[in-house]
Every structure is written in C-alpha cells, then in structure tokens.
Length: 191
Image (cartoon, rainbow, N blue to C red):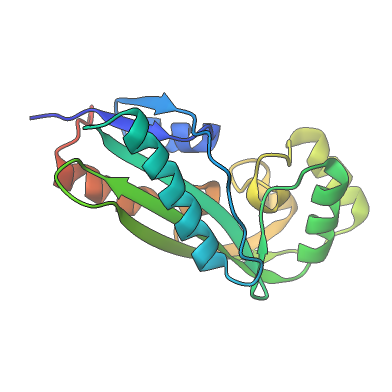
C-alpha cells in the first residue's frame, strides 16, 4: 500500500529534497506563529516543527505529514532567517572565519501514531571573507528565507570551507532520516 505524503512547508529547498528522493507529495503552506527561544536552538526547532505538524493534522486529518524548522546555533544563540538584506549582511559578517551548527527539527506524523520529532545537527565552517565577497554572494544568492542568510546549495565555495553531517540538513531537511521514515510508513517513492 502506498500512502500519500503532505509536506507542511513553503520552502523550495524542502520541495527539491523530497523531489530528489523520488517522493510524490502535496504541499500545505502552514499558517502558524513561529517561536524563538533565543538561547535554545533545539527547543526552537522542535516547537516550530511540532506546531507546523499540528496545523497540518488539523487541516488534513488522516494523512501522513512531514514538517520541519531549521535554525543556526551560533555559540548557543538562535540565528534564524534574516528579515532584510542588511540583517543578512550582518549575519554573514559574524559567520566569517567561524564554525556553527545547523539544527533542523523534523516532525513526522502518520495517522496510526503520535508525531515523532527528530533533530538533526550538521556543522559548517565558514571561510574568512570580505564585505565585497558578501556583496558578490548576494548578487547571485537571495539570502532571505534561509536560516543564517546563506544557501549551501548555491555558490558555497564563496563562503564555506567545509561541513560535516548531512548536507541536505543544512539545506533544511535531512534526507537520510526522511527516507528511512518514508520506507517505514510505506509512503510511495517513484524510485
């Protein structure tokens, strides 16, 4: 039996990751108020992923749901999406030459059970770079709607020297844990 999956997310990167996994899915864009626990990145992603999943369950009862939230853990402080180019610029200036963790809370729900929340962590090492590098980066990458104001899938060589852990987690959805859950739930994959 193949079940239908609902992705509760507006993120194009999450759509791309699921598509690359060969999953057929529908999308619901959640209308929830996200929270931020400034000094607790893990609690932030768990709470927001859970809120999105609860919203999806109320909207599409009886369906398998996947929801997620991603933030940067920068020295124990939450860094989320910048609200302006100036804020994105300040984020990248702060990241220059440093290391930070990317946390994604993934809420997985199947009608036969409770919502399961998994937190995936990856680590990113940034190059040291100038303000001119940031401006060139912004000319080719839209930093808004991305935790930390950057995208590892677009021109990472300009700002990132290395990373460890799941690359797709840094993009916003850890493919490994998602693939495992899809198989467990017998949710249809094209390949």
